[in-house]
Structures are given as structure tokens and as C-alpha cells.
Image 1 (cartoon, rainbow over the protein chains, first blue to last red):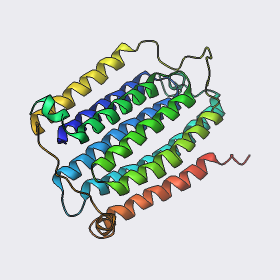
Image 2 (cartoon, rainbow over the protein chains, first blue to last red; image 1 turned 90 degrees about the vertical axis):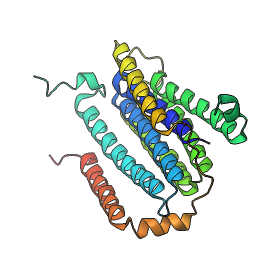
Image 3 (cartoon, rainbow over the protein chains, first blue to last red; image 1 turned 180 degrees about the vertical axis):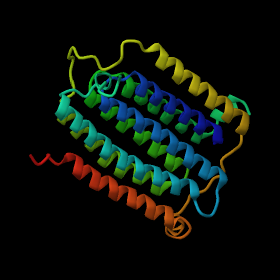
Image 4 (cartoon, rainbow over the protein chains, first blue to last red; image 1 turned 30 degrees about the vertical axis):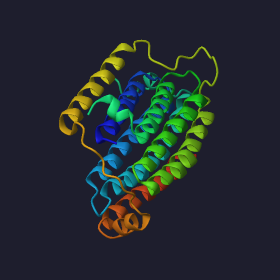
Length: 101
Length: 172
């Protein structure tokens, strides 16, 4: 296995996630696309960790950190989306123009 | 090293199958019209990433992905979809923006940039075989990386408290 095959796959998943973030209108779907991008980053970290092969397994440790932060982000993000839905009865990102001048 | 050399190894065929499944699932996540189906397609993509972690010898991370992402995060997403009563069928509500080609352009440009950079930098360098044992990972996590570990734990605690505060009803 060469290291570049994992990097290309991660780049593809990351780009698909970017497309989802930009093209989707529902806030829950935007969060799903962000999860896709974080999964791509995890593949990168673990592939580089195996490639370098250091004694501290740093790539895998940082992949675990990314997973933890992603879990926190989903919890807070969904809480905010539910709150927005409760106040405005819509979870579409283009209708949240309260701060637009 | 040409493509025929690359594909002649059994591990690379497994990688190819998994990656095709992952990319297909990822494309469905960002295009499908049913939100519940999008969440379930994300399960397929994350399961593929767990399989890749096992191929790379990162077994603890693989099972962490299965437990935390597929087990907890997806359930949280399904709760979010149910609570916000997002369209789950062929409702007239649009899920995408009208103009999609700028998003396609940005995604393609990102992919081109990253792939050019990594191919120039790494070419055909091999990943050495080997499995990272979980006790090595644990020693590293609670030895060298104990301060970042505590910081991440604090972030998780703050997110927990923030989630409770956000979900609570305002006292009138």
C-alpha cells in the first residue's frame, strides 16, 4: 500500500463534503457533510501515522482527538439547530438572515 | 510503479473495493433527497473508514469510530432529523440551493489542489506493514499526550454543559 492512495481518497471525501456544505440547504445536512470532511481528515491522520511509524502513535492519538471534538461539535450544533427550529420553525440556512443588513 | 503492479497486491484490491463503496456512499450523502437515507449513507461511509483503519493497523481507532460515530453520533443525527421535522419523503421543500455549479467548482478545485500537492510530495512511497497495539496507544495517550487529552476532556465537558443549557426551556 502506498501512502498516496489514502491521501487521494481522503481528498475526494473532503471535496464531496465541501460540495455538501455549500450546496445543501438544510442545516442538519450541512452538519452531515462536515462529519464527512472530518472522517476524511481522520483517514489522513491515521495514514500519515502508519507511514511515519513513530513510537508514540501520534497520528492515531490525534485521530482520537478529532473524533472527540467531532462528537462535541455535533452535540452543540444539533442543539443550536433544534433551538433555531423552535424559534423560527425552519432549519434552512438561507432563511436565517436575521444578522444580514 | 504502474497500475498493474499496484493492483496485483491483494490489499490494494480490498482498498479499491472499500474506497469505491465509500465514495459512492459519500456522494449519496450529499445528493439524496431523504434525510434519513443521507444519515444511513454516512454510516456506510464511516464503516468504510473503519475498515481502512484496520487495514492501516489502527484497530483501536477503528473500533472507536464504530462505537462513537456509528453508535452515538448517527443516533444523535436521527434525533435531530426527527425533532426538526425535516422533509423525509418527496416533499416539495427543496433540500439543495438552486445554483449548484459554484459548489461543484470549489469542490473540484480543492480536490485538484490537494491531489497535486500530495502526489508531488509523496509519489509512490510505501506504508510499512505493522499494527499499533492498543497498549502502546494507551501509554502514549496517558503519557506524552496527557495534557492535550485533559484539554479535550474539558472541551467535551463544556459541550455537555452547553448542550444542557441550550436544550433547557427558558424560565418565563
